[in-house]
Length: 86
Image (cartoon, rainbow, N blue to C red; front, side):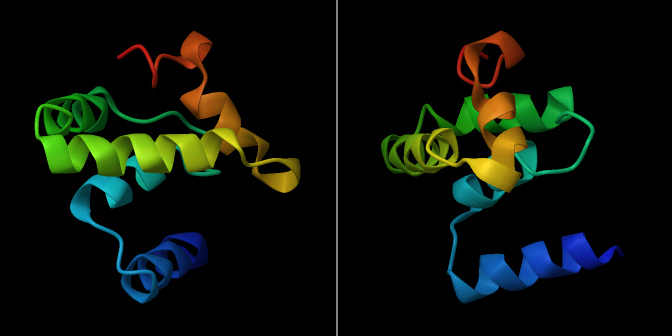
């Protein structure tokens, strides 16, 4: 397990993120590769649940407002990269 993955797990626990929020965080991480199609499909399925939809969109909005060193968060959520339109 890499240090970034370990750090991400600790943050997920400390901030008490839901399953939906964790999946969005994973899909929009600073890792140089994009999210898997199965992860994107899971996130899309979660949006059919009213509570999970609010959690997904809240995290997407948070990621869209990131800047600086977290530019990949914004890039991976942008419509050109399909997170919003998936």
